[in-house]
Structure formats: C-alpha cells, structure tokens
Length: 202
Image 1 (tube, one colour):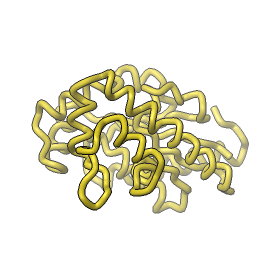
Image 2: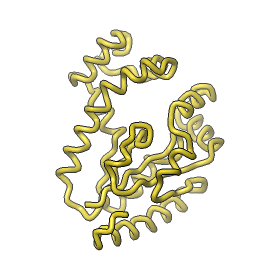
Image 3: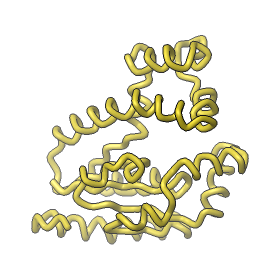
Image 4: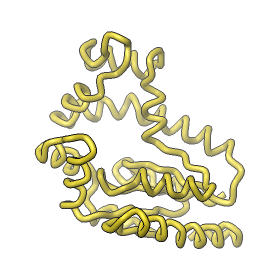
C-alpha cells in the first residue's frame, strides 16, 4: 500500500486537505486525532502527564486542560520535549496498528510534526500543505482567537517552510478557497491511485 505522509505548518489547512481525501474514499490515519485519544480520561498517557506536569493540567471531570498544558510546553522547550517523550511513541504505535489493518491502494497519514520528528522515512511520499505565513496567522486568529505572540511561538517551534518543502514530493499551496483545495486534492488522488496501481511509490 502506498503511504502518503501529509504535513504542513499550523493554519496551513492540513486537516481540511485530509478531510478532502477522506471524502474521496481514501483512508486517513490522523496523528492529531490519535493524540486526543491517547490522553482521554483513564489512559496511561494522561496519568503520566499529570505526574510530570502537575494536577493543574487536569480539570474536575478528569480531562486534559490543553490550554494550560500548551502554555507550559511552548514557554519551555525542555518541557515540550518531556511531553513529546510521553506522547510520540504511543501515537506512533497506534498509527502503525491502524495502518496494518488497512486494505486500500493508498492511504494518507496526517502527521503535523512529520519533518520535526524525522518520520519522512516511514512514508513513501511526503505531501506538504503550504500557505503564506500571513495567511497562517489570519486563519489561526479566526479559528481559536490566539494572540499573534501565541501563534508566533507555535510557528517558531515547528519546522520552517523551507525545511518542509525541501523534503516534499508533492506540494499544495493552499492560499485560495476550498474549491481550489478540493481540485488540487482530486488531481493528487488521481496521481496517487495511478502510482499505487503500478506500485511506483516514488
């Protein structure tokens, strides 16, 4: 099975692009969704996070307080690394299990930190969803009301655009509307289906 690793910076439109592939019937294994699953109440990762970062990151209902944890880790690279050590191995294990159960010509693995965590070697092709930085800021402000300082901290913690584009096999510049994005995804869907049919993965 052809495995396409989909990635991009925050606010680039990764999730929307992944959804577009899903609408075409392509299996999508999403690291962000799995990341939420592994920190659900009762999960070992949540207990380890509480031990590492303190009980204030858990609310009264036993759920993770993402806003509080985010403030802690983006202010301190060492703390962010601690969190990654807890989450990344678990996320990778679940992704591998789900990939092993799939039966399709090709699939999408949506991995926001694909480049940062060196996972490009785990996929056959890398698809980067790219957007100008000013547009990233605009989308994130509209989406969750983050301040420019918060957005800047997140962007600076991620791989730079040039670094992502350097490892890309395919690029979608997502700087127009949804219809344009859907058309770009459809073109790649046809391309990936053809590659998968001929078992030509690069």
